[in-house]
Picture 1 (cartoon, rainbow, N blue to C red):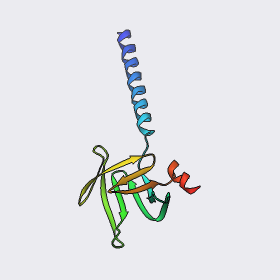
Picture 2 (picture 1 turned 180 degrees about the horizontal axis):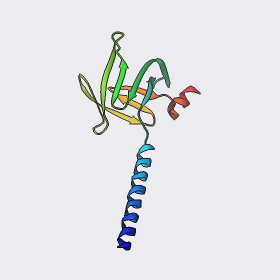
Picture 3 (picture 1 turned 90 degrees about the vertical axis):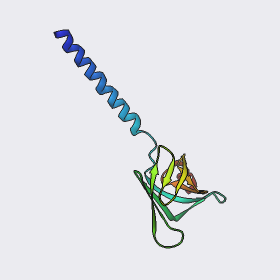
Picture 4 (picture 1 turned 180 degrees about the vertical axis):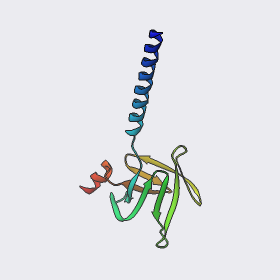
Length: 116
């Protein structure tokens, strides 16, 4: 009976350590949450006026036609933005791109390089 108790304790410790390792590895992933600025590739600059924000699955950006805000949903599994239309996006090294437009994430390495 005593051996079975130690066996259960060891299994429980392994499960707890495995869960902690998994949580830490997922927590270190490059989160897309934050503010993004419109990036102009031809001049290698960004606009401080046009700000897109991502918080979890919610994406908001200013409308180009008026003062309203466009709200979209982020589908990270399929790499798509969902709203009145569905469009693919890419996210790499602090750059978020969709429909031929690029945004650079505030405080990313790419953003800091632009500030120099």
